[in-house]
Length: 146
Image 1 (cartoon, rainbow, N blue to C red):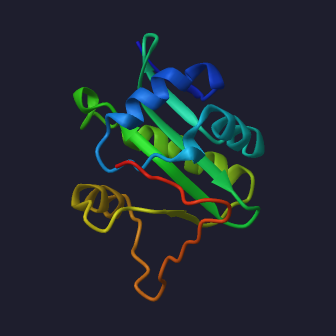
Image 2: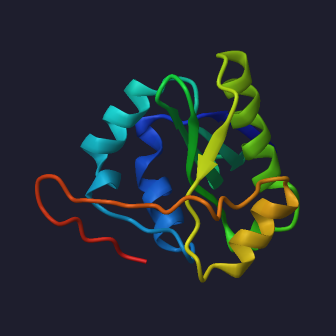
């Protein structure tokens, strides 16, 4: 049976397996158990998993800064794609943002991830060519595996 529920730290082993095996998901120290736990505590009720019985087949991290929402690591297991599960996770997250008054949401997509860009644009998301993303590592360089 397929169902969606809130993400919890008990999901971590299945989450890291899903994200590690999903193309175009960048993983770093931010995805360690300690950091994911802190993220979930800072953003309660905004991250979800979709399950087939007890197996996590998709997940999404949702967060916000009080003004803008952000989606991270939306992923669906390859075997379950094209069944609306990614859309279901996205809808759950966006509805929850709306309930708490978040009016706009952002997502980072690798520029060479054409299938990801196609997915998001089909869902009504738009590029912001007038913006450029800049980043700086604060404490130490963060290794991102992709």
